Length: 246
Image (cartoon, rainbow, N blue to C red; front, side):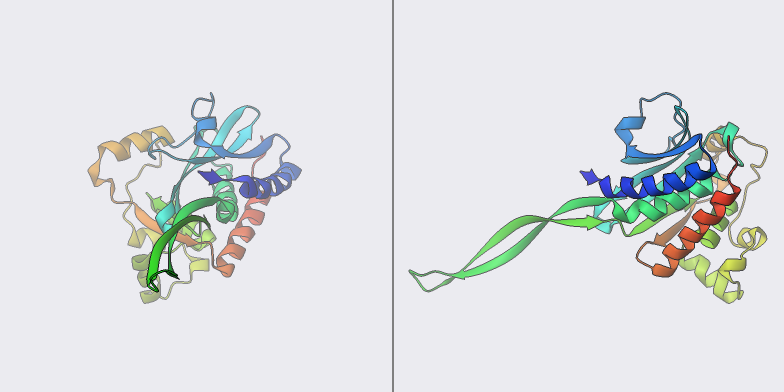
């Protein structure tokens, strides 16, 4: 089981900043079970068994969301985003990614640990060993996102300092500064199928039915890197000024 109490506290602080700009919008973090049967929730359906959902609510409607799936063994969390079609182009997706990246390291969970203890037998003078079981608390320390198109890649790399070894090599070989990365430069690396005139639902259906769409680019954001976290907070602050209020 996961504890999201500390993460919720951070969400509440960011929510205050959001509502200073847009009174009708609010952030909500909770477990998937709280959202899956709720009406008017836009959640990315292709992620299997998400555990945690971050919602951007407009009244009772979750108009934009981040679905999260945590892998305890690697201390990583995979995220997938979805914004309702009628609310696309309002900077909600970028804002929500910034929020989940800022609070993810506060999500806690327990893992089993074992320790070998050696003691000396008083009666026989021999050493005895036994395994002591217990639990230790861990937190998420990296975010994984599968970028399906160059626009998503540009967003994650330029504004959230996401990494991919092959892409990093491409940037180095071409002497490209991440902070000045352009969409055309990303397209040179990542093939794109033109889905510009499709809605989100049509694009998702296209991806499911067309093997030629291309493999998603696996990008990682390291939450233990101070410069990365500063970049993410700067992205949240700058995006907040551009968010379109309902």
